[in-house]
Structure formats: C-alpha cells, structure tokens
Image (tube, rainbow, N blue to C red; front, top):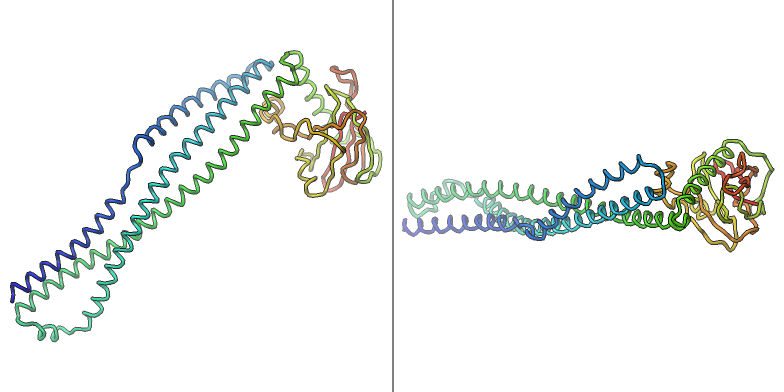
Length: 383
C-alpha cells in the first residue's frame, strides 16, 4: 500500500512540475527574434543615411555664409531638397523598423497572454483545492489515512504541493508584470509610429515646398543673376513699405463698407507684373488670409481671380533671406484695372512707398483697412 501511495505522490508531483515546465516553455517561446537580415539591413541603411545628412548639413551651413547669388541660392535649395529627401527616407526606414518591432512585441504580448491565462487557470484550481483542504481538520486527515505511513506520505505530498503553490503564485505575479510591461511597450511604439507618420507627412510637404521654391526662382528670374538681385530688392522694398504703413505711416481715408470698391488692380512699385498683394495682419503679425475668409470675417478682394503665390509659399527662400516663414500674403490677379473690394468694413488708409522703385521707376501704392480688434488687411501694388 505504501508503495502504491508513494508512486501516486511521485506521479502527482511530476504532473504538477510538468505544468510549470509548460509555463516556462510558453515564456521561452515568447522571446521572438527580429527578422535578422532585413532588420540589420534597415539599421545599416539608416546609419548611412544619417552620415549623409550630417555631410549635407555642413554644406548648407557653409552656404549660408556665401554671397547671395542665384547660383548659390539654387545650390542651397538643392542641398536642402536632398537633405529633406534623406530625412523622408530616414522616417520611412524608422517606420519599417517600428513595424517589425511592433509585430515582435505583439507576438510576445499574445504569447504572454496565453501564458497568463494558463497560469491563472492553474492557480485558480489550486486555490480552490486549498480552500477545500482548509476544511479538513488534522485529526480527521489522520483518521482517514489507511496507516501512519499513509498519513506521513500525505503530509510530504501536501508540503511539496504548497511549495509549488507558492512558486506558482510568484510566477503568476511575474507574468502579470511582464504582460503589463509588454502592453506599455506596445502602446509606446504605436505612439512613436503615429508621430513618425505625422513627421513624414510634414517632410513630404516641405519637399514639395522646396522644389516649388527652386522652380519659382528659376522661373521668375529666368535663370539670370540680374533678375535675381532685382527680386531680392523688390521683396525688401515691399516689406519695408508695408511695415511703415502698418506702423502709422498712412493717410486716413475714412470708413468703408464690406464689398465696397476701394481701388483697382495695378502694377505700381517693385512689381514685375500686375497683381494684388493681399495681406492680413493680427496685432502686426502676418497671418494666412484664408483663416479669416473661411470663418466669414473677411471676403475675397477680387472677383474672377487666380492665385499666383500662396501665403507661406517659398518658405526656405523667405526664411533664409528675410527671416519670414514663407510669402506673407496671397498674390492674386484678375487683370490690370480689375476692381478691388474691401474684405470687410473698417477705416481705410492710403499708403505708398517712400520713393520710386529703382526697378520700375514707380511709387508703390496700397490701401490698408483697420477692421478693429487688431485685425488689418492690406492691398498693395494698386493703380
């Protein structure tokens, strides 16, 4: 009888140990390796990319100290375009790495979840057994034994099982902590992925803007240095004139109503062709006119127009040469002599350049309307 009971105890302990071995095996299988070759290749390409970016940044920094010529400016833009292209490639590379990482962590999380469910089920079964066992008095357990040896074997078995129970509960605690850490890790990687996607979208927009800046300069200057220097002077004079006008250097005309004709499209001042420079300022800071047009506060100042340059266009060229985040107004045209309408009601002021522009021999003219609350609109290059 003693041998039979001893065999039973050994088999029971073996089964329980096997259960724990299964838990360990699940944990071991959850340690997945990244797809080696492809991941290593991504890392190698990323390192090469970053090295090339550093070289380009050195070139760009050095170009900023060079003479402001069309050739140097185009070279600067081409380096900036290549840098942005590399930054896009870097973001795409990091996204590919994150995709592998997220897949790896997701699989680990899934395996850990299976391990957690299994360990929880084993622990729940043991807790129920312990609960039932707690109702058996030691005397009753002794009396129910076939012999004293039987009773001793049961005691040894019980102590072994309880030791395994403690180990099991510790394992359950560790598995829960591992699951929580892996879940946080997965959420963190997904947040990084979302940020990278937004950065990638912004970089792609920047690349379009930089290419547009290059094409704009080549088009407006016809790839001629003389024309480029004229363009620089044109923008500088325009900025200074508008700044003076906004600062109080304008003559009051009086109240105007929204939609009232206030001027006609011209080509005065430093303007290479007829257009209306339509700007909106809030407390002296240029903002995109579309913001106030879209919310209904302002309306378009021309009818049947086409836009020749958007607000914020040619960002890199403006930021490098004038410290402005792109073109500070919307250039539009409806044809020479087209009526210009007040974008909203307010007090109108007449403004002009301080002297004729050396490019055209004419004095630039404009109208400024103060709409109140720090909001002003400007209409430049009028007849």
